Length: 455
Figure 1 (cartoon, rainbow, N blue to C red):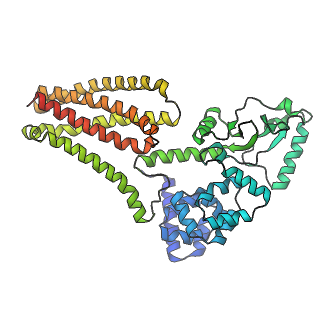
Figure 2 (spheres, rainbow, N blue to C red):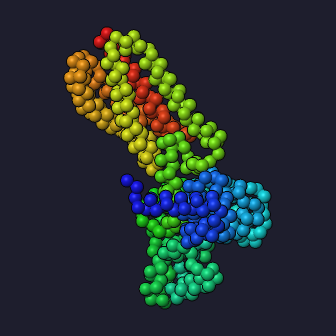
Figure 3 (cartoon, rainbow, N blue to C red):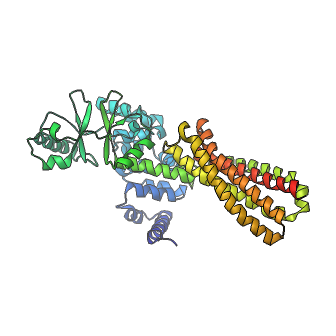
């Protein structure tokens, strides 16, 4: 059943769609007023391609920059293509240096060049510093504007610093729960919580009020590890440091939520052989080519399975029950294998699986599959005996089921590890290869055993 929120969103989309088609600009403006840039990005992604420019050009410059940050790859590319150079520069002028670094790879070179020409020396240096780090690392996530104080000043001086910072910038940095404490060389020492700044004696030194032992994050730490640290430690913000311990910037919880969302989207889309950048209203030819690859892989797998079945054509002709039962063996192996595959892929993503525990994990999964295999082999053997009045067929069917469940466990454990070694995303390719394996082994074991013992 659709939720009330989803129904409201659908109605909103329909009203906006209709207003854009009719050219009712006033209605469009009223509908998008008050929406967050992330919500506008969602709206744009849900619109057919031909209507997106109509809405895009109704947005103010400051909103356009934020929407570009929120939009997914192909949608972002379409919006950039629908904009001229001046429109893009006006939109980018409202963004921070780390946000510009997130976008520059998708921008035309002429726009990037003009954007850099409009920066002063300090801005250009900060921009180059951020973009020198890969997007999927702490350096790519961090904000360079980390509020920091020395340990040898008192809390009264910290309050004056925060007032000056607010006066200069118009506001304090987002999610400012603490201030980074550094020494004269800008080496990270710890944090000073804002709650302590406003509640402790104003004459107290920062060195007395600060909290040490709060983890800092090396600049090249993978983004997934950053997200895990925030989750494990319940952090709102964290310092990013260089190899020498120098404070470089700050990561906040909103950056980490984006990482978590991208991971979740990647997992869901990968099951269908797609990526999070896929545009559901994208151009047909590129969409066809992307999907055709995985359809082709599945077709090859299907032909291999069909070839295996063909090897036992005479056996199937002699006993029709084999044709009825063989899909059950294959599907049971596929389900068992996918359970293991999901567990192992998650373990790889969390850094929980390595050489030290792979053998133990494989043994455990094999034992689990053996126990499940014995349980369900007894059940299906009983069903087959009742159905076909053939005890031998029930024994063969149960034995094939055990074999394929064991193969599913083995493939589900070893296949993602092998794909990772080869530099292939296990979430993207693991499921396709696993199903091919369990189909072939399921058909081969069931039809092979039946040929040997029943015919």
